[in-house]
Amino acid sequence: MAIFSLIRISYIFCKYRLDELLDPLANKVLLSLLFFFPKIFFRKQKEIEYRLSDALEEMGPLFIKFGQLLSTRPDLVGEKQASILKKFQNDLKPFSTREAIEIVEQDLESPIDQIFESFSEEPLAAASIGC
Image (cartoon, rainbow, N blue to C red; front, side, top):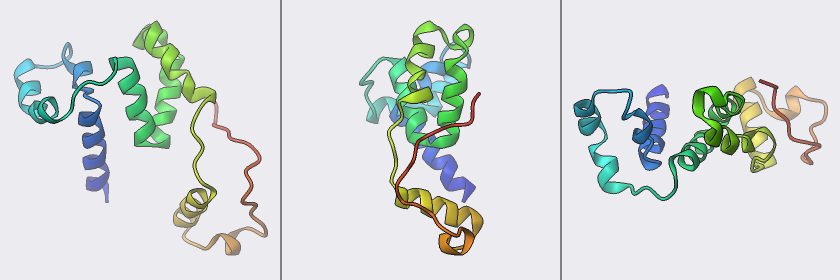
């Protein structure tokens, strides 16, 4: 299961051409070999700051949380990137109630009606645990 997650994350990394973030940090020869295919198959559509934000959002809740953390650290990611990542603090796309129920059932390994006395399919609000 973990290998599929790694493959998915690697694909998203390549899809958004986040190899650009590593250029100053790593050996150019290694990067050339490792990221040869993304440069052929994926074109840069937006500025790197927006691509990073989109990639984190596509990768899911854990990475969104990481984006929220980074949005509070302009000293690490720069003012522009921090500003773009602020959308993770209060402007995320909602996901379906069905998806939420499936996540709860999968994590708790039981049907939702056996776990809770009642479970409203109407969301009250969206929230995240603070950074």
